[in-house]
Image (tube, rainbow, N blue to C red; front, side, top):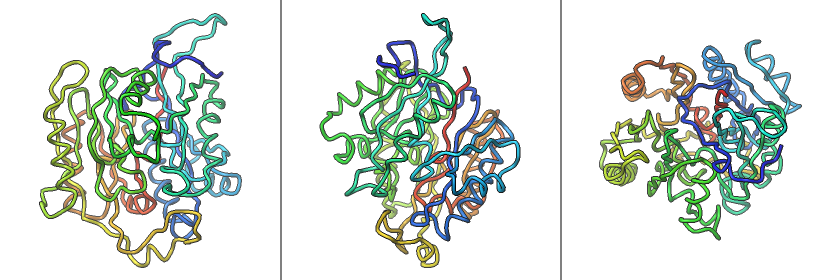
Length: 373
């Protein structure tokens, strides 16, 4: 069912990630020009992520026809595997942004408490600046998910990825100017026009703009979900480094300054929790050599700094599914910080998450929560 009005006009809003989920959606990686060694390592780690999440909420993994059997064999039987075409597996960005509203009976006597926004997508920057040259299959993923679940669909022509926004469920949205104001997204829209669309479609009253995202996050042009997120209303987690020689330091300080002077939509001054980044980590010669550099996708070059961040975790029902990068000091510190920030949640470590960041994102980027009605 395609909806013509904006979600907020019908009482919908995007809930916070910690609100109850009915399930989680993920995609199955396979691109040999993005995932090394024909994605076998990435598939192994994604299976670990999906298995961890499935202990706390239902999960659906979507795989191409060529990969369905492989995915089915690698995943536990309690995980649903659906066949779905896609260009790559970043379901945070190509899947729908789910919105909810209080129960309301429509004229056809059916209740729609959950719906989805189907944003436009251009592979994080278009033919000249994006991550791959053909994204025609990705354009239908959100529509297929919403159709499969028989949920209303709010189409939008604005190019926007789910990883570029984060909300507190009480009217506040976090994003970055580096991404949403980038000329490779919506060059004909002003900052004010983009903000108006976020308010109309997400049901928020205030948008907090950080200047830039994580250093090295060139694939997404600085998505917010690598840089900063809400832990609860009025509390944010910010990617941080104490090393003043690290290029990330300037970005973290810049964001800290903005956040320190902001209040959420309810007027609450923000509490900032620093979450130190790992490393820095760099792509090795072996890792780069395992990627098929065929010109269809952005090259993966040895020595490239990886956009690794502990902010890129997933909030499941009762659990924080967090990446671990093999940097023991900061891996352990991240678990300590997250355990304090989410005292009523089990913090679950996903070892080997480096394999996901090699492809350009992490656990939050490969998941999409489907809120409960």
